[in-house]
Amino acid sequence: MITIKHNIDSKRFLTLWAKYVRTPNILQHCQNCIHGPYSKKFGLKNPNFNNETTMTFDETDNYQAIYFCGISKKEASKEMVHPHNPNIVMKRNYLHNLHFAIIPHEGAKDVWDFEEWHVEIEGGYLTRIPEEEEIPEKYKQGIYDDHYYTCRIFRWMLGFFYLHEIVK
Image 1 (cartoon, helix red, strand yellow):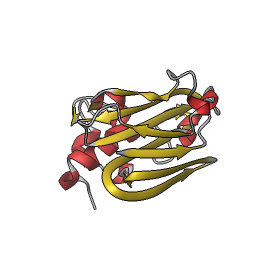
Image 2 (cartoon, rainbow, N blue to C red):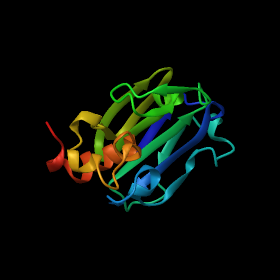
Image 3 (cartoon, rainbow, N blue to C red):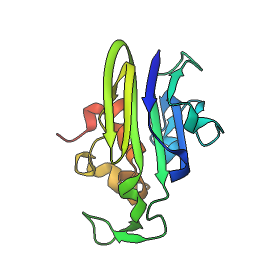
Image 4 (spheres, rainbow, N blue to C red):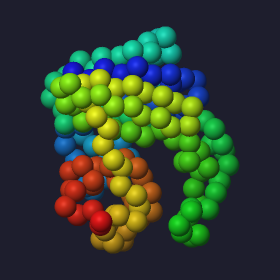
């Protein structure tokens, strides 16, 4: 069972959620590319979230990972040019968005730090989100526009469920 200790302030996010990931959907991006139930404990739907700095994820035992996402309010109204593609304009808060995934593993411990956020993990370990450059070209054309390969959730889903396709 995964337990986290965190200092995340829900007031600083437009959206904040965790999802118990069961299966992938390679034809979607964002939340829709990972299937499974949302945590009722982690996120904006929990009115006591900021007071519950230690959480045990015991809402289901049928999952392969837990994906955590927070869309930051910081610079949300500003735009920027994509760092690798000048044809893509994106919201500046992209740089400050919270993304990490935990794989359950009894006895494992890990730590996730990003900007001012700190998460201590027990009962699981972090899994990597592939970089855009590691995504195969076939996921950058056709239906797979920039909303797919810039999406960290989609890239994580590819790296977790389709690791053999990631460009090394």
